[in-house]
Amino acid sequence: MDKGVFITFEGGEGSGKTTQINRLAESLTHKGYKVITTREPGGTPEAEKIRDFLVQREGGDWSPMAECLLLFAAREMHYNRIIKPALDEGKIVICDRFTDSTRAYQGYGHDLDLNKIEQLKLISLGDVEADITYILDIDCKEGLARSGRRLSATQINNEAQREDRFENLDTSFHERLRQGFLDIAKNAPQRCHVIDASQPLDDVEQDIFEIMLTKLGG
Ligand code: T5A
Image (cartoon, rainbow, N blue to C red; front, side):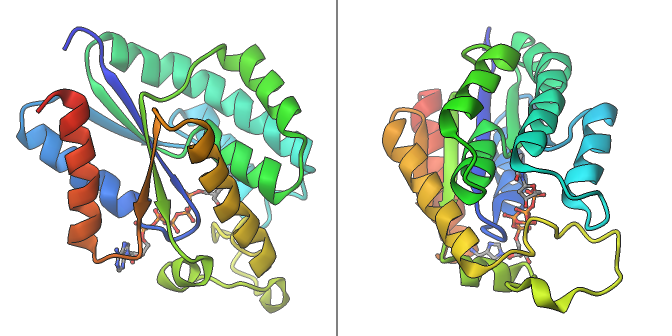
């Protein structure tokens, strides 16, 4: 491939993104494609530092707009230093979360104006979007139960390093997220594919791989 393929995985907590990314990367590598996997927030040393602020419990109490600015600061470096160069080399880049997570979490979840999110995206990334986005859809309680995390903020303990600041929000937040991801998919049907993530692992993997093969032309 002259130009690579940019694939993103999106969805609520515990929807199985990491598991499926690893499986897809392995299958594509086996077929001879050059694949890199990466994640957001993160992907560069600088962006991993921003991740620590945002996802660890003692990383600070950021407003939704401040979170959004930090996320796009991290994303701008991640895209330009890691993702774009790999795509230019013809690689397949699989990224765990990207701009749709900001739309869903900060926009739908935390009620930040979606137009402001799009403006910040345009300033930092221009018209960059993934070529293929998989939205792993699952009932939020099931997803949280899978990842062993909690629905209520009332059970704080002192494990400061746990990455659960976003997960540690009430059920309605997670339901807004789910609806947000489904709206995003509805508005970008060429790019987004909603996958029923409540299925057994192998079935989810198969759905994802079939779409991938169609996009890669067999
Ligand atoms: N965030 C991120 C924002 O608010 N805005 C943004 O712009 C961005 C980019 C970190 C946090 O940052 C927020 C969102 C997040 O809260 P993250 O690291 O992706 O994002 O965190 P999580 O989504 O919480 O990651 P998880 O590890 O919980 O979920 P995954 O990766 O979706 O799920 P995975 O693969 O680790 O699976 C969880 C468990 O379920 C099992 C797995 O074996 C594992 O034990 N599982 C299944 N079990 C049965 N059947 C299946 N089909 C299964 N699939 C997986």
